[in-house]
Length: 233
Image 1 (cartoon, helix red, strand yellow):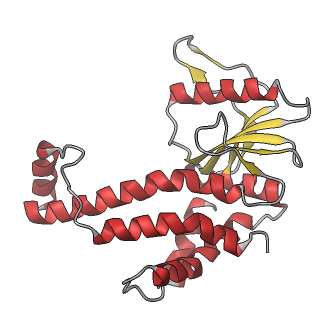
Image 2: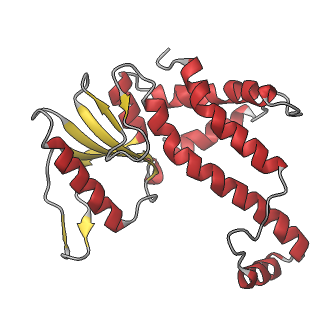
C-alpha cells in the first residue's frame, strides 16, 4: 500500500464529522448575509418556491464549508507519506521533503488561486529555495487540473502590475495532482488508489459518529469511476 490507511482516516475524520454535523444542523442561513436579490432571480429562473430555494441554499452552504476543508486535505494526506513533512497551516509553504528534495504549495483546484496570489506563491517558492541546496525543486501543485491535463512545467505566473510573467526558473514548477502523487510515491496509480480508499473509510467514520443513521456509503461503481476518469483522464 502506498498510503497508511489509519493515517488517511485520521486526516478525514474531522472533515467527515464536520460535514455530517453541518448537514444535520439547522444552521442560520443568514449568518453570511443571504443575497435576497439572487434568491428571487434564481428561484424564478428555476421555477421553484422560495422555500425550495432556501433548502438548496442550505445544501450549497454546507458544500462550501466542505470545500474549504478539502483545500487543506491533500496537504495533510501528503504529509502522512514517509519522508514528507507537513509544514502546517500558516506556514510559508505546505510540505517539504528532504528525501525527495522538494518544497511545495498544494492547492485543491487549478482555479483556486487568483493571479495576484500566484505571484506571491512564486515569490515564496523562490525565497524558500534560496535556503535549500541547489538540487531542490519548488512545486506549485494543482491537484485537480483543467480538462484532465498532466503537466510538470516551469511556473511562470503573470504579474498584472508589471505587465509581464515571472522569469522562467526550472526549479520552480507547476504540476498536476496525479503527476505529483506519482512523483512522491513512485506509483502511477497513487491518486486513483487514494480515491478508491475513501468510501470504506468514510463508512467507518460515519458509523463512529454517535447517533448517526448512515449505513454503508453506496456510490455506484460506474459513476464513481466515471467522475474520477473525467478529471484525471
